[in-house]
Length: 332
Image 1 (tube, helix red, strand yellow):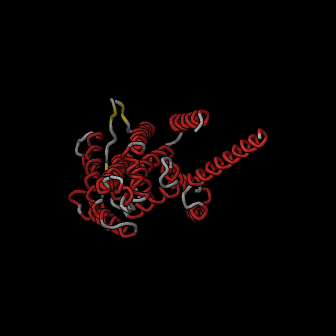
Image 2 (cartoon, rainbow, N blue to C red):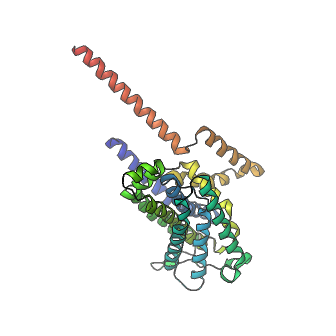
Image 3 (cartoon, helix red, strand yellow):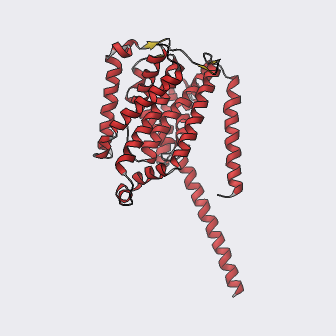
């Protein structure tokens, strides 16, 4: 990448960050809730993108880990725990369960692994619904408090939105570092060719487990923020449909691309709201838009951009070769 291109990307990123900070200050309560939900779902989708997009391990259980994090956060904060401590428990619990769930991935792959994670998602939903002594059952948990961060209350929509946005920024930096570290390269080797990775000395067993565990932990982070965002949780939001929505976010945005979850969550969370002016047709139009996109570009939105940039680089290289050849012929 040229220096100009790098500076252009940095400038564009700074503009987006400034917009996310400044523009929502004029939004109403519902608009801030939707943007906060986008930030939370982006964190969960980033975890699934790490497991699926980078490590190549199919999972239909990410929604269940969001539920684990949400219930852990709700139970602890309603009993007087501060949110940072409750988030730590949510992350640790999701990490341990994700590590254990990774063991079937050592023996089965592809759609078989999808069925295993689907079974776990169903099991988690049944626990949320039936173990009323812990989760409140179908009545759920209400009056979930919002925290005070460094002495500032976040009980109003705008401060809590900034809390969600700040959490997204921290998670993004951590994932950015991870995928560019030796661990990230090991995850990508699992996706491309596990046998070759093993022959090169990559401990495929350990990295498969780590891919599940870290991705699940990010689901726990999202759940830990989702509980105080809604201030009420019950089992319904954490059924299989949430896992499918998160899977769609990753695929629509671009599986294996860092910014794929950001765009995918924007499509899944914001597009239905933007289409509400069509009244009863907005869900149909949303579904049609997603279907057309995936037919046209199975690699998602960023896949389109990646192909465009690849074609542009190819044309530029061909033009440079043609110029060099003509100069060589002139010299001769």
